Length: 131
Image (cartoon, rainbow, N blue to C red):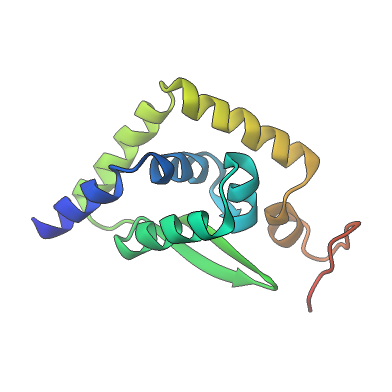
């Protein structure tokens, strides 16, 4: 029961819901992408991602100079079911839809995630690749 209560505490914050929405729809993002899309400071994004990681909703992986966040592989049936329902609920919310518009704009303009996940072997203007 404690895990379920902690899960709902994690979902009780607007910023964490907005971050989860982006991860549900993009699969992977780095902190600076989330920061850029939502207009949050880096410490705020990192703090909320750490909270979500501690309750088992997200995971991270280092790729070069970036730390990439994605949804965790959920093995608990209750949490898995809740996440499926959340995605449907996210799709109904106007503010979260607006965040997805910003996500799509950021993808078109080129994001850090694009540089290190999709095209890691290429060098982009203003971005140094670390080998």
